[in-house]
Image 1 (cartoon, helix red, strand yellow):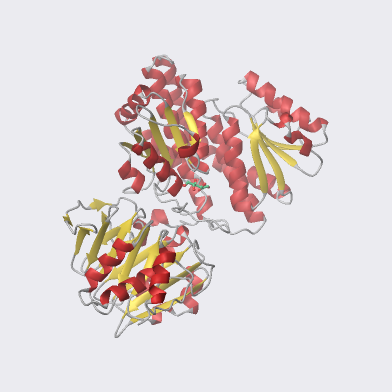
Image 2 (cartoon, rainbow, N blue to C red):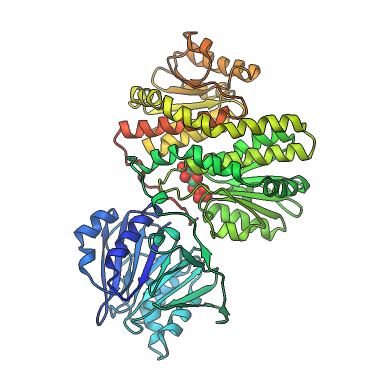
Length: 606
Ligand code: F6R
């Protein structure tokens, strides 16, 4: 939800901390701050706003120090105010703390501390940590002991980092259910809530597990368990992402850059070794029930998977929205739960996965972020390899998840005999051709998507409709315009419309209809029927389709004529087209595309 960074060096770290905050801003961006040790206490500068603005206004780089922590916030407890921004200080102004997660017992801790004469300056749960450390120090003992004691008192989720002039050559940090990673440099070390905090400075990282803390110095680090202080040895992880990949590379927005990266990110999925796909497919096949879980876009990726498993592999794969999964489905022994997640940290999906583990189910995951909680928790993992997705809205990560599920459906279908080897081979060839289909589409059709978006940007109430696999296509496409353009867009099955929602149709609400290729005769025909029902009630219809005869039929009010694609891969072309449409609608409306209001990249709270 928020971003944490920390650097300890032999030179001033303020400039690097600001850079690091910029790279973490996608995790949350309503306010930010830094704390540096440079004398008697910790100097804190913070305010509300984007990193670049706050850093300039608060003169972050004028504060000098060789040890510092920083934070970019996405509010959970307490309003968006300068006081609620991190870092937080204890009463004596010495101990500075940044925190991600939610401390569920903070009210009780806070009232105990107030009774002991601590005074609080913010409404956050996080500030209690600074005061707890200060309180624990009153009994004598080391700063480290006071820090550990404070961590042991916390309930809920946390990634915490702390600096104090009592130990001016160290950064203390610890985690429970919120990610925290150490970065190892040359005579300079780092901490971060993810790799982006320090990927510009080092590629070597060590992941902290739940219930562990670390003491980081310039020369090294020590990890121990918070519970029994047992020292931990952990392998160093090499991050393969390059810095440039995480930058915009000439595009005006990360969203557009990431849309254009899809030929290559889809290519990455096609490179995943077949044995790896088969291993996961065998597990899927031997499961009693197969559940595909995600939330938001990843739920729609899972739904796409459900349709492909049904049509290609002939087996049910139940897509569940992970925020509801533990309550809506009884999942137990011999079931397999496959979590789909870009970040691998999303609270709802992590909770669903944990519930599955508790109930004795088997677990698997499709994840983008190496070393993330889900990547480590699931028994079998496929890393989708999409590289960092910086725009808050998911594009390239989503299509890679869909592709991975398509490959899995093909493999399961081949294993259980639902498809013959020749058909599998033919469909794999279609998949292999997808990067160039998408690349041609982006090169040749972007202008059409842009003009369509500009013609319709002024209409802010939409129904997004599709049948079969085009139903999740419609849902995902509607989510994209909701997120970036702030338009009301309700996704639903085109066949569902006549069961109630059709009462809404008039000349003000527009319908966006997603068609299959005309070769899918039945699906195509019934989608046409839905359009006719809307037109008969005076509704206006815009469609994404690839049929010349439909284009000339006069039935549609406007359209994006897509290139012809094989029915197996055509839904992905529609998804990419809808991403572009949402992007151009948002830019036509002057929206903040990469950081839409109220959203955060990684939602790690309930
Ligand atoms: C939409 C979007 C979100 C995420 C959802 C899950 O564009 O990005 O709906 O898909 O929050 O996040 P991850 O994939 O990180 O688990």
